[in-house]
Length: 167
Image (cartoon, rainbow, N blue to C red; front, side, top):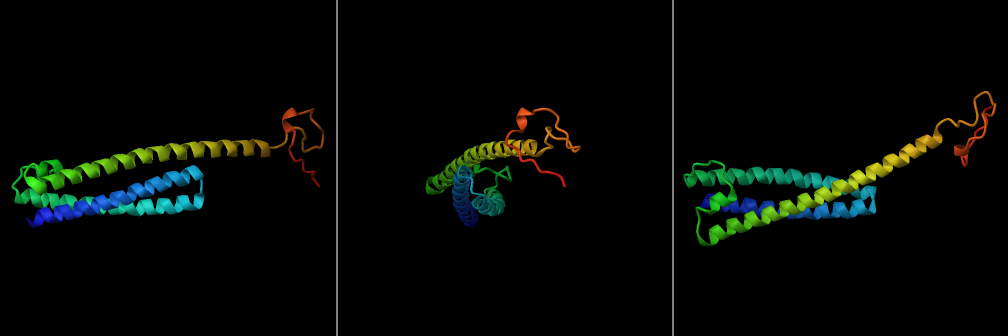
């Protein structure tokens, strides 16, 4: 059956792309842990390309599934893989069930790693925000000296600050 073969072919392609996406998400995790900005940008670019490819292949397999559902005269014009597998026997049924299982596993792993990566990104942003706030506080006007040149008492917080003499 031609529609079945098209469906299996598009699903095999989808599995391959999901595996690549999983590798990219793993690499993203490694790069986030090492905090290498150049690599983070490259990984994000690769990830965006893979997600676009997943969307393309997802539409392709759904089109194939719809064709197959029409040929099988199913009521549901957009069946799931498991619904389709129920209408086959032997090797064809097993193949669809295996593809469903592999895709499900890959999507779950990608989702889990993506959540871990999101936590790392939020932690890094919180750290950077704290450092920026600290720098801002340090660079604010020194409360020890006024623009008049008069000293306003001893300020314990000003230790270690650079003082610029106005000309």
